[in-house]
Length: 456
Image (tube, rainbow, N blue to C red; front, top):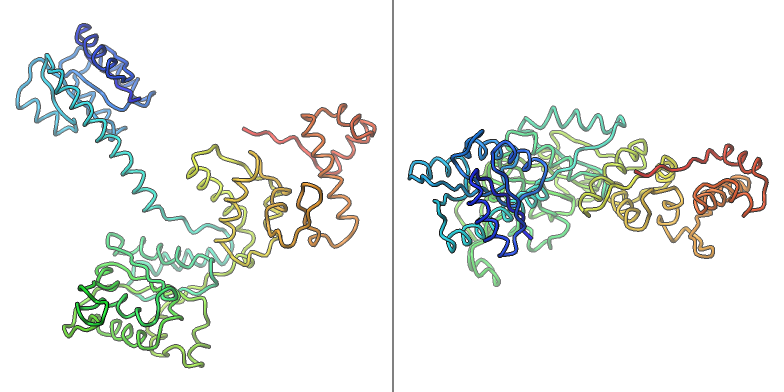
């Protein structure tokens, strides 16, 4: 149900408008002055404001102006008993959706209200979608390797130098490429990504450079290639080590001459693009095997940025995990979950063969499967099931223990912790249930550093 605020210093007008709108099943509130209206707008989520122009204490146009500064998506319909063209124009200029004269025509009022609500909802939806589309994660971490990457990006981004980003799959090469674009003079232009490994070799030239109608059997119309689409911006050639030699030759020419020719075409087209490439392969070895052109390698590798695997920067896992927690909980629209220091240490013990991508997926899994507080037990339970053993209803990982005493202490700690939580940390009740003395239980709590988790 849409929530509407009526602002008018005439009680009869407020009552009339409220009666009409409530009959149409709108949730309606009203006030007789602009100062109170601004306070209400700041505290409550209205979908629409109907506001008189001539009022005591504060003019309606001033209410509109102040509201627009803090809540630009909130639509206003201005109402006046002294309507003029100049007033209507002024209201529109300040951001009003529409202007209605008193006494309002019932049909026009309801149509205007409906249209204003639709426009307000569309504006909010558009803003949310833009935020999702344009959202670029920060390059997170404090490890020396990440600090070096950040410094290199800051230094290189504002130049036109071509950059080759190397590193294993899932390590964050695309993120580095996007930050190179965002911090460059081309940031207002497009960044076009091409996954060279995902495009068949017979189609890669058409994908990169476009084709003319009739240039081959399925070319039923002209196609604009990625280089043309990226004109004025950046083209990101991901997994360039998988590109065919024939396509490599054309890319080399495009880099040398800043010109391309569509497949089946004869006319040369000027292109102004910055090229950032990435690969998980050792291109020098690929050159030795005859799979990659040496001259293209030298063209692409003016600057080389190596992104290390996550296993070489485990000190960054705490920062990454907490950032992913906030991001995913926000996307899911659920309260923020917390992760214990022990759980972070458990994450640091894992191999992370899938790197940052695997960590992101792991955090998403933990958010879905765990309670408000993510513990080390949750990490062991929901990581690498192939290395775990099911004991009763619990999945447990044996391989992380080297000595029997370590295993014994861990199981004892988890058992006591479980019983304490079950009994809401009533020590006496827990001691009776597990048949040990309270003093002995207190000693165990101190030994294992057990603390009651305070969940906000």
